[in-house]
Length: 304
Image (tube, rainbow, N blue to C red; front, side, top):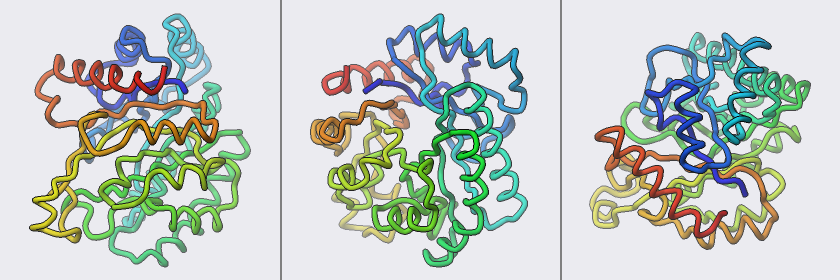
């Protein structure tokens, strides 16, 4: 596996400083945030280390040369919107930008995009599956034409009242994965596997690795800590952040030895990107950099 970093945590850095930092910290690769330039709707969103709207051949060559000189590979272009947003204008804008990111990924020779499938958050699962069938064939047709793999992260995007009640990403469990893959029968559609999201959903995060071995295109290293005493008080129907918290790898409840062992069992040899979303390390730039170093040092027990 190639150990990498999700660039969104370096939100205040430009492209060059971000790549320099990734290189100096000894990462093999980076998942590059490619949001539209402008105000973010949520934490860790709105980061644009590559502006796909401004990508031409000259900029492409500059990006590839800059990364090559620093021995950093781009594992994926990342854009995590709600492509099934209930607001038609937002939905259209998100789908259009995702297509731009797919084109940019092909242009850069990365040929991987990490994203969400989306969800109408106040609609039932069956209705959302119909929305997937209406929206996603066009996206995947473009991806197939350009030879770009699209890896859907299994984050429910349900944390608090803004995403209540259903969250903003449908593709969150093995049951729904099977349904989506039955609807969208594209070899270019797969999974960006993050075990932390299964921890708080009370889903087995090891067994699906074997079942979906051919669909795991990209993986994340992020942890989640459950607080049982809070869960006993508020129950699973509460806002998830009422009983859990994202943590650095090794500071939560994921069994990283078991997870990485399963990935080696299936012969996974792709990118494994650390995703830092731990509020305990966000008070200043020095703390953010410390959190990245700590995460990398911990995960290097399992991935070199």
